[in-house]
Amino acid sequence: MSKVVAIDGPAGAGKSTVAKLLAERCGFTYVNTGSLYRAIAWRAFRDGVDIGNLPGAFLDSVDLRYEKGVLLVDGVDPGPALRTPECAAAASRIAVQPLVRKFLLPVQRRTAEAGWIVMEGRDIGSVIFPDAAYKFFVTASVEERARRRMAEHPDGKLSFEEIKKMISDRDYQDSHRAEAPLRQADDAVFVDTSELTVEQVVETLRGYMKKNPRE
Image (cartoon, rainbow, N blue to C red):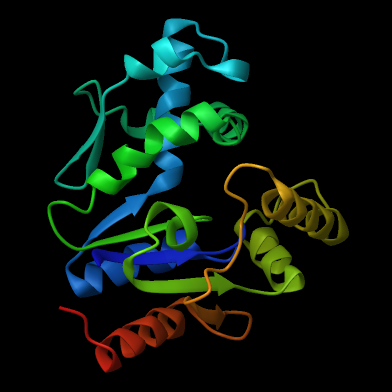
């Protein structure tokens, strides 16, 4: 059993916010797997490497590690540079490459060697940590996720229906991709957040963990 709380789910379900708060409340380390893909994109941009098909030699030259919860790339903290729209867009292209996912698998697994972690993504409980101590599949209706997206960007140019379609299309792509598709692990606890606040979701997860302690 790995000392991992795995939180999987589709885009816009609030996984990152919930995972961060849960980690804080439990005193665990929070790991955002998306940052790893953005970190590779950042290095590729810096080195002028084509992100469309990253070569193994390039990946082998990248050193990714966490120190006190901070992701370091070759010993450097890129900080806000990882959160630029360019890195986010590139990360989506990088994440579907089998060679990249193979490279990141041991990197992700090493994060649990120092103690308890909360890791969120789309294949944490099903692929990265199939032996995770706790597995949750956090989701919400497409309508609710669209409403949340609009609330986050009230001055956006997209309509509610356009955002709904984008989310539905992303769900389909994530669920049907050949490499590590989005799916609920057989032993994951399903949590529908459509009618819940962030606080209620966090307490729902904590409540389950308290009732089902792991050593």
